[in-house]
Each structure stands twice: as C-alpha cells, then as structure tokens.
Length: 159
Image (cartoon, rainbow, N blue to C red; front, side):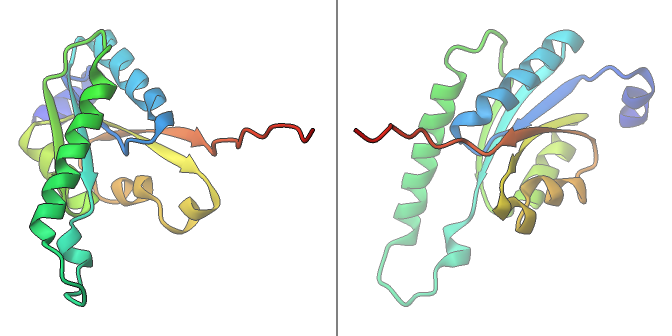
C-alpha cells in the first residue's frame, strides 16, 4: 500500500542514491539531494562492490577476507569524502559487497525506498554490461537514471 500511495501522490519519502565512486557521480548525488530537498524525503546512499569471493579461484594464495575488509574500508572512506560537503542529511550510508541488483533490491525492500537514483556511463562497454539495465529489470520502486557522458581525455598540445 505504501508504494501505491507514493506513486499516486508523486511524493517521495525515501530516496536511495546508488554510486559507483567514479568522479562524475557527483552529478548523480546532486540530483538525489535536489529531489530529497524538493520532497523533504529521507536520503540514503549505497555502493555495492563485487564480492571478491565470487572471483577467487583458489589458484593463488591470498587471504580473501583481509582483502575484502581492505576494499570495504577504502569504500567507506571514499563515500565519507563524497558526502562531506553535502548540504542535506544522509539517513543511511551503505557499503555492501555482492550482486548489485540483489543488494539494491534488498535495501529498497527493507528500507521502504520509493525512488532509486543511479548513473549510467555512456560508453561502449556499458552497451555490453550496464548496471542501470540490471536495476531497471529488477528494482521494485521508481528509478531515475542520470546519463554520465564518457569522460573526455585531457590532452596537452605537443611542443
């Protein structure tokens, strides 16, 4: 009932911003903040790293738990830096490991998120593997996809 009421009144109560920690994700975060302000909604931020256990083949001798903990700590630090100068309160900051669609869907359900904001990198590779497409096909709330143009390389003229 909560989701139907939200869609009918077009007022969002909880906005979740999904970030991949690329530099151009400030645009995605800014859009989420602007919408949260407009709707006076709760704002949460999520980043999902791939679980290294899914990639580990046991052919090399590494402590996968230790590496995963280091990745999680680095992610928390980067998220904290991104959110430092935000002029809107963040209700929850989530750094998870696992499948993107499953992790985001679990948070959408458990936190009663009614709008998910994410970015979509407009590159050749995104035609083959798009996180936004994964979410589009699975998420159970409204979805706003912010296009993120391919970053142009800065070149210096030859002398």
